[in-house]
Length: 120
Image (cartoon, rainbow, N blue to C red):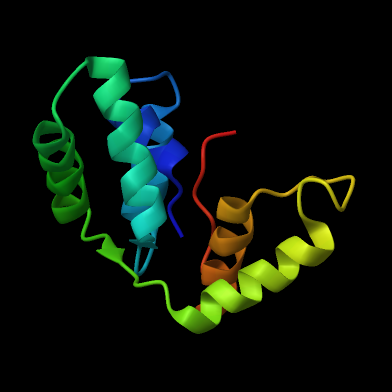
C-alpha cells in the first residue's frame, strides 16, 4: 500500500524521494487507494500552484511508470474503517487515528504481506 506521502516525496523531489521510489520499484504488486490519489493531487496542486489536470497527469505518469494499481474502496472496507474509528479514532483513543489512516490500514490488511510505503 503506497501512501500519498511516498508519492509526494518523489514528485516534490524531497530528500527521501529516491528511497520511496526504490521501495515502490521493489514491491511485487504495488497498489494505492483513491484516497491517496486524491491527497497526492490536492497537495501537488497547492505545492506547485497547478491545475487539477496537471496534478493528475503528474501522478498518473508515476503510477504508470511504477505499475501501481489503484485498488477501489468498497462499502465493506468503509464500514470496517468506521468501526475502527469508533474504537480508535481521534477523540476516542490516545493514538488519535484519522479516518484515512484507518482506511489505509484496512486496505493493507486486505492483501496479505503487502507492505505500507510511506514517508516518515
